[in-house]
Picture 1 (tube, rainbow, N blue to C red):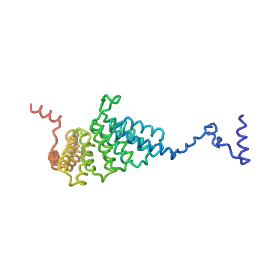
Picture 2: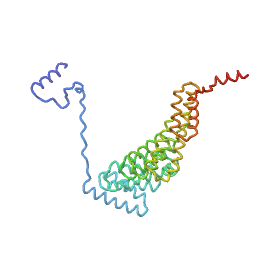
Picture 3: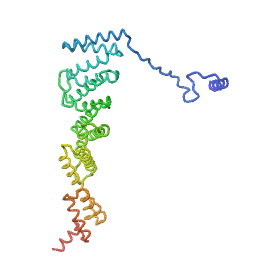
Picture 4: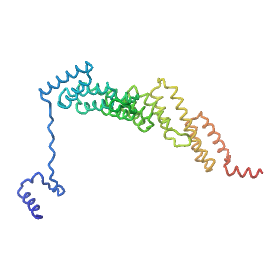
Length: 342
């Protein structure tokens, strides 16, 4: 048996006969005889199916207008199931989603509308589908509760609202609802203390939709998110620097904004905090390491960051002492002075 395969291959090559489809010149493929999957042909609804689906759709609409939402939903569901490739199927799913929304079943409504996006991207009322999805997400954002068995209220679903807003951005990245969804996503993430998600959403809004009417709010909110992450001058100042950056960008890009006074005040606060952190570092090298060179670097940086701040005034006093040759009073020298005084 071991000799048959090499002999068969050699004969095939000599005679020019092509190998069977399941054989390959790559030895790693010789024992893989799985048939290749054939692509299923795209099924298009026939004219008769289109007519039937359209007639059913009209009956469903009539019931919906008459207030028989249950009967209308059953018809729409049957259209989507029996005639999924018909032109009427997209609208049937959209209307079915609207019925779920009328019953305040926002998650189910969103999921049904997502089927329209996935299976019927050419639906002529695509914008209305996205608008309906935005309505679902907004309802959850505003505190709408899920309902157990469609009756018993359950918990608020903020995380689901965030997921839905993210899905809307993916569904229609060039639509009007994309920047709105990113802003709402950021606000929800900040509310839920998920700062990284908030920063990511706002950053995308600024970079992908700089002309949006929400751009000023995005810059302001992003600066605020970073400000909230600041723990004090004793800690790492990465968030402080980011807050300063976005406050400064805001002042440059939106000089006519109503937020101008507030932004200037917040920027001054962040600059003072950063200056204080530099002063603390300078004091560390001056008092505890007797390294005047390093201390001067941080004292000068303090003055540069916030020249009119209290920290800057202290930094100038330290610089004068260093230039005058005044030796700092460290903890050890202070103890010695007290003992000598006794």
